Image (cartoon, rainbow, N blue to C red; front, top):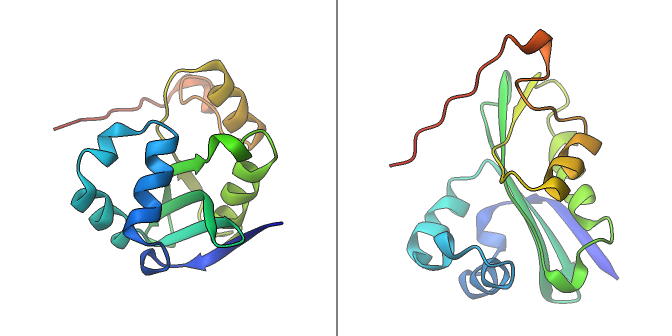
Amino acid sequence: MVVIDAGGVAGAVGRDEALALYEAVGWSAYTKDPDGLVRALAGSTLVATARDGDRLVGLARVVTDGASILYLQDVLVHPDAQRTGLGRRLVSALLDAYPDVRQKVLLTDDEPAQKAFYESLGFGDTRDVHGGVLRTFVRFD
């Protein structure tokens, strides 16, 4: 049975188990810099985890001011547990913790399955919401 914990802080996730999960989903940008991953988790406002027994099978995290904006980051589900509703449960647990935050933002790859997943959770491409008057900017250093 998979248990979701949305009251977590980064310390609830061990370095090795986090690296194993990120590796399992192929997110090498994180696994190339384990110390950076540890810092990213530690700097998160809230971390939701999913465990099957002691095994970490899912993780999602947010960074937020708690009032006006929430950035959803790193929604990961181990390949063995994908397509079971686990990703939806992780995201819902995080968003439910901040019901009064109006603006919820995420950045993701341009894959049809990811687009469909986030749209099913109420997210929309900035080009398609509010009459198309919003524009998104990003900078990677």
